[in-house]
Each structure stands twice: as C-alpha cells, then as structure tokens.
Amino acid sequence: MAKTYRHTFIRQAGNALATTLVRAGIKAGPIHLLTVRGRKSGQPRTTPVAVVERNGQRYLVATFGLVDWVRNLRAAKEATLTRGRRPEAISVVELAPAEAAPILKSCIGTGGPITEGYFDVTPESPLQDFEREALRHPVFQVISKR
Image 1 (spheres, rainbow, N blue to C red):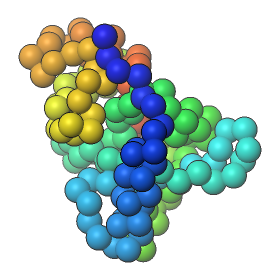
Image 2: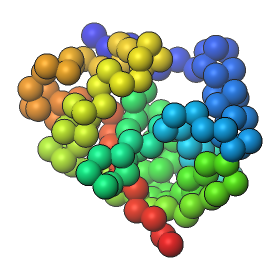
Image 3: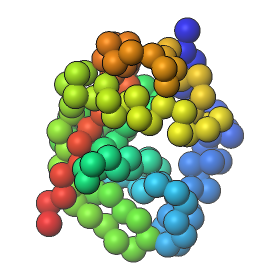
C-alpha cells in the first residue's frame, strides 16, 4: 500500500528551501514554482513542482497524489510557472488515465527517496497498473500561453 502524503515540518522546510533557490535563479533540477489561484480563497498559492519533459511536451505529475495544488489546478485550469525571474502563463489539460500511464511509468523512481513509496507500482509493472495509478496521481499537460 502506497504512503499517504503528510505535510510535515521537514517537507515544509524542503519546500521553503526549493522555493528560495528557484526564486534566486538557482536551478534545482526540474523544479519550477507553480502559482495557481486557490479554489476556495481565490488567493494565489505557490508551491514547488517538478516539470517533466517527454517527447517535446511538458507535464506536471502529482507524485504525492491529490494534494491542494492538484485540486486548485483542476479548478482553475491555468497557472503560472516560474523559474528564476521568468514567469510563464500556462494552461493545463488533465490527461486521461490511458494517456497518463506512459508518463507515469517513465517517471517512476526518478524522484529518489523523496517520492519513494507513494506509488503502488514498480518500473516493471504493466501499463494497465499505471492506468489505475493515474486515478490517484493525475498528470497535466502544460500548454504555454505565449
């Protein structure tokens, strides 16, 4: 059984560090800042996320499951991705499980110990298992508004 995401002090500190590094223009792997309007408050909410690139397309993968940024992005369908001082207005399309499965399969295990244990599949699992996993870990295709 996969772990459930917990917003612990360690995660909060890690998110603060990642946010500071990205805002300062220091590249921290695929990490960008996602700013999306809160679905209830209407206030902008910013969180560090990994942008996955596959076949010339960019994706946001909900590694930790149905967390707040996922719910907010589903409601808003648009956001801003920032890396350094370069904000980019984006819209997103949530992929169907059959479309999301290959993206999830290519990403599994790339997050190291940070993401380990949040999936009920392994890199060797068949695509059908990843389709079921996509229900708990949505994948959004990023579309630039430039």
